[in-house]
Image 1 (cartoon, rainbow, N blue to C red):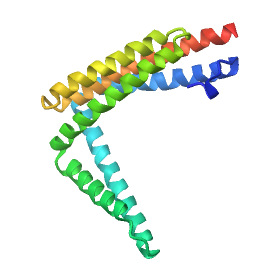
Image 2 (image 1 turned 180 degrees about the vertical axis):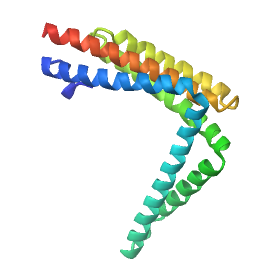
Image 3 (image 1 turned 90 degrees about the vertical axis):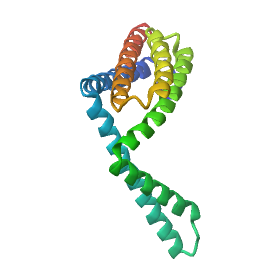
Image 4 (image 1 turned 30 degrees about the vertical axis):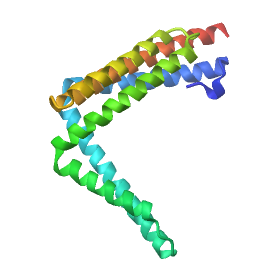
Length: 186
């Protein structure tokens, strides 16, 4: 968030602007996700299916180029096959894709939550950093709730994602306010 980790007036103003913009976007997307959780779950799953296909085709193209150069890129071939198959499964079997995505998102929320808690200790001098800690703790809690309940329904992804985005957005806006106050004092 800060350039070179410095708390200069210019860096605080830039960080404030970024925090406000990204925070506001996260709030909007979070509320949309909460208002249509099932649609959000399947939209995420479908988008991921297309991304996996794109990655698989990219690896296949890379492997083809390497074969033409006389190299045997088995790792590209392996990743191409796995990515294309995963993409096809996500697009043709959306419920299986949503359950898989639930497991992946639980891991993401855990990692994101731990990262935010660590960031809190780095930014605790900035006003509003408590919100970063709260957002991190919520991410960790959501990860455990999702891991425990990922079979209960596809709407869980949209709801949990919505809440995480809302709390992340609020935490960034509060950090932006902290940077605003800090820039006035520098």
